[in-house]
Image (cartoon, rainbow, N blue to C red; front, top):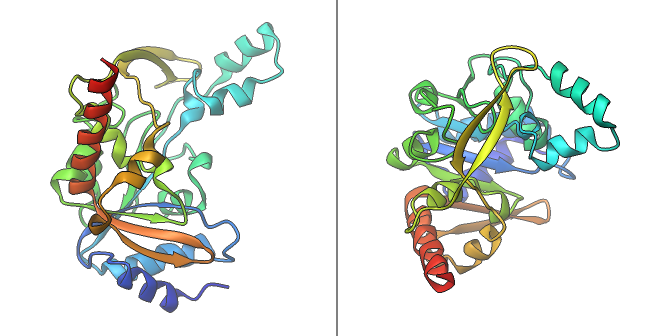
Length: 257
């Protein structure tokens, strides 16, 4: 069983900013650590002035997502229609985020936590700046300039990849919006306001397929690396990593043009 004090020491040595803002992606599988222990150790390392943020995405609420397709796999046309009609709307206070892992769900359900309003790509947070950073998440902007990611960037937030790689680093999605030329757009559909109320909107066509490769090409001096329970732990400031990712993505687009 993981010890809270030992985890706090690990996080401090990994550069978790005391009094700062920290976004965490985590996989606790195989560690024996309860998500509450990890949450509390992170809050200990951040201190009372620090703010903890996690992705609380709900891809199930998008009929083009892998998560949604898995839910309707094997259903016939009638059953799919019935499933869609019965789909509950996104509710920031109650909709779970099962695909984001145990830590994210733990933070989301902690008393006092706040959550942004986007029906597919919300973030949840604890701490004195959580409400300010997660407010006004535009319903037609997943993770761009009208999302909390842009405010985390401006707040000089740090990111902690706890036993996961850059493949799941949502901060890199902000870089996608900032590439030149900008990414193509596509239609998204989700359920809002009432049961079965599907709405459509357009936003950037997000693609995380090269995030792992982008992470491998980042300058090593931007990253603090440790290990916990047999897997890597990586901490970094969001701004320079997003800026470098913008450069990499823009170069990629230029080569393809």
